[in-house]
Image (cartoon, rainbow, N blue to C red):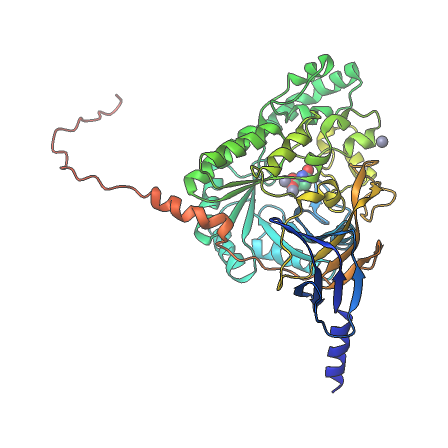
Length: 506
Ligand code: URP
Ligand code: ZN
Ligand code: ZN
Ligand code: ZN
């Protein structure tokens, strides 16, 4: 009896009617009311007949968009000798504040740690802290039979359908080409997505090592801080260099574009779908677009940082400001890159957006104050992504869908700032940007977590969302490619003629 009463109470509390808003889906926008119960959209339409006791949210003049999904975060990641300052609590709280109702984080432990052990560690960190739903990708940073076996367990029993491989971070996370090929073949067998951080780690390591002394000299000559070399050692062909920067441009190499091409070639050979994380340059985006036109199953992920700002900040006179923009692959110092990437996102050449949110405070960035190579790589984004690119929200508002919704005021504005954001980090790469469009209400699993702009989250309320393998989006075309590429039999007689002899020492 008591239980039933409680159940009724909970249910009444979670009954929500959203009235008068404009529902924005990927294919059409309609004016309709939405009725939510127990975290699920139960009805969409006008003049809905609904049970009593529901809370009504008036959404006249507002857009109702699906809650955002950030495909790429690193909450509390132990990295480069320190640990990302936004953990699964502050990171997901900030996500919700900005209208993102789900994040996808990376299990990324040290090389050699069994994948299942690393997975358990991330689940333990996240489950008790997340305020919104989350999924996990798992990084493969070394290769052997037990990794291959663990990948199978992860896909079949742990809700993982994506694995990330690194072509960067030599001696830390980087795989060589044959390990990459093996991991892609395994992904293919399991129906999983292969994800790649594409930068040529050998070149980065070598150029960085060579650059150290020269960098000090150039930094003195140009008033450029040392970390500019970080960009220069990873530059793309599209970099714009003025006379001063040309000196540094001598260090330029195509480290991102080359790695993207190589990853696509290897994936093509394994007939495995591939997802290039954080597309940072025009070259990388064009390589992906070209490959897609040639029939490769490849997806590109620009991030809030590469769509919303650029690498010119790395020349800022304030060291913290400049170091705050250091990430890998680097933001390009070409101010036309963000618009270009946005165009490719809009026309479908690029697939979706994440953030690579991996935040470090000033004192952590300062680990690299005398050596740019030691600046922990990473920027913010999880809170501001929706505002920076809100019109590109993904998902669908339909009966039966999770009630992860954002009631968006397209006319309201806010100014992004580290002083007012909800992330734990003390810096914001979008500082001062005035964005049009503000989440007035955010509904996560039917709970109103942003209520007239006020944040009301609960630690541990998010759920882990398992992802199925063999998704149609990734594997639909793989099967037909498989058929088309099957070797054809040629009927011919066996060669009976002479065979030359190979002599020793010849
Ligand atoms: O600069 C970045 N992206 N830091 C996070 C680690 C990674 O590379 O994904
Ligand atoms: Zn990465
Ligand atoms: Zn500054
Ligand atoms: Zn990342």
